[in-house]
Amino acid sequence: MTHSLSNTVGDAPTGAAEPDYRQQMICPLCGGTAHNRYHAHPGYSAAATYDIYHCADCVTAFADPMRGETGLYDCIYSNYRRIPGYLRYAHYAQAVRSSKDPLSYLAGMEGAYWSVAKTLERYGDDRSINILEIGSGSGYLTYAIAKRDFTITGLDVSSEAVSTAKRLYGDHYACADLFEYSRTHRAQYDLVIMTEVIEHVDAPRAFLAAAEQLLKPGGRILVTTPDRGAFPAHAVWQTEYPPVHYWWFTARSFAELAEQLNLSLSFVDITGAPGSMPVNPDHVGDGLQPDRAVVFLDRGRLNPALRRQVRAQRLYYALHRIGLVSLVRRAKQAKAATPRAAVSAGRPYCLCAVFTKRRDASAG
Image 1 (cartoon, one colour):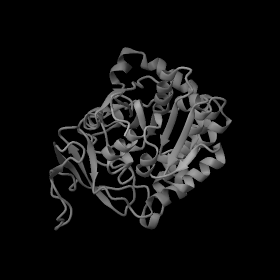
Image 2 (tube, rainbow, N blue to C red):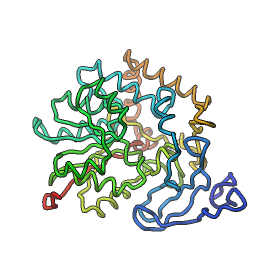
Image 3 (cartoon, one colour):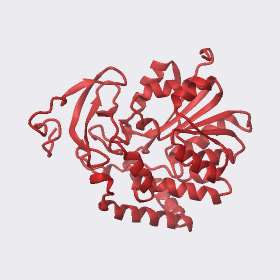
Image 4 (tube, helix red, strand yellow):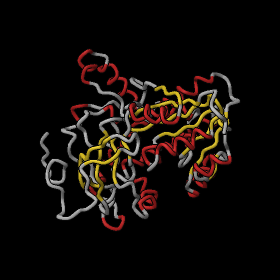
């Protein structure tokens, strides 16, 4: 395999003396051998770079070091309406307030939320179940589920996020660290929801184990995350840059976690779901080089190169509000029904897994 940049593994690493540079390391997820696929990969801001490793055993990609940048999330929350990866959350937070059925609205926007709605269908008309959303952020998904008359708590470590959610949607939220919360709320929940959270944490096994402690026997954890398995195997890192995302998981990653934690595992197939985004192989390129701009420049200054992408997203949501997006989507779905399109269409970006606590497991 040929690489065109000098800082990809296979060529000389950048810098004359970098003692932490390693060609391979032990995978922190499964203990297998992980190979350095890209040395000094750009980070979310220009302040730091990261090595990208791919595990040959569990097919997981991860960044090293797993160390955040001081003040990064303060910069993100101060600018989230101007960052492509976060702008949609601001739109959802506003849109659900005017929707008669907020969960149906969200399910039509993204496969992750469609999988939540699909999982809730398992419970039928039973509204006695107790639900926890971990990483509830601005609170719109918790609110949408509560509007279906489910009992749900949104949990977030950010006091600012919880305060905003309570102001917008009511008293459905708690501010706490998951590990502390799991010690005081053991075996209290039938369903725990984590949408686009697990890729942000440095220790996913411990994080998932803490969530499992919250479950009653037979309880479920729904996890959604960007799916590395939807991309060509050689793709290096086509997800948010570290340290916003430390991990790029596959179905095999989750199978490894389920085995380690003695949990049953199933997947929600979102192929063809409204709002699900299939990967177009023609848009992936060679997958070997970073294909995104860094978000922040020096001292937290937002990269002006993002403005065009932000304008395009704002236009998309404006068109969605007046119904034009749904017309385009139906036309694309009709086109996708042809044999040629079916061959070229990729898997959805989103991986949706359900971990189930065995009924014979200890309640802790």
